[in-house]
Image (cartoon, rainbow, N blue to C red; front, top):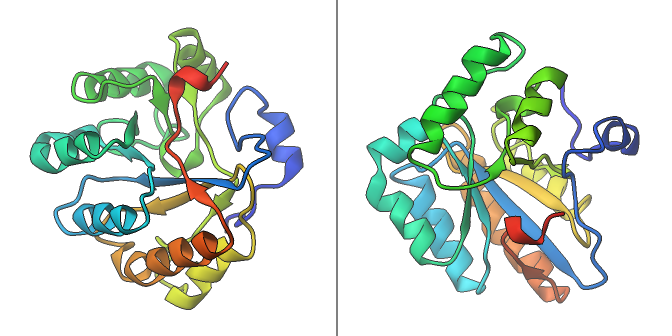
Length: 209
């Protein structure tokens, strides 16, 4: 069970996290979790290039270690990166000390103050620790659901096209599991919003107060 469109009450409850941006212009913030991946990430990069789009990649430390050339390609193409822990820890299942060590391990490979918790699961204690260390905790406004093996590629596309708007942070995954849905939905989402006059920007940590 998950929210496709993050409800306003949840955003207000965890107001110190970033869920979306206030935009007067037609701008979307596409984000990709769990990579880099040897097939999915190059596909994403090529699709983004077709539309002159920039995005943000919340990477796992272990995957950066395993695919450094692909990670370097993300950076050289002008996208931003964020820390997604070293090996996709669920903060509801491990204590804050263990979790923060995992984040620190990932930070040795990922130079960024942007952070997204795997599964969106983070305790208040860990959240305070991250914020106190200068991290910007980036959540989302719209979840594509590409990771959901029970969701059709067409419905994955609709999740984004029917719910995203100005300033939305949208989540996709450049991972093995999500690739069948991602491969279908991402090109169509890019085309749909481009025709509506949207641009696609990376999250800039320096612009977040």
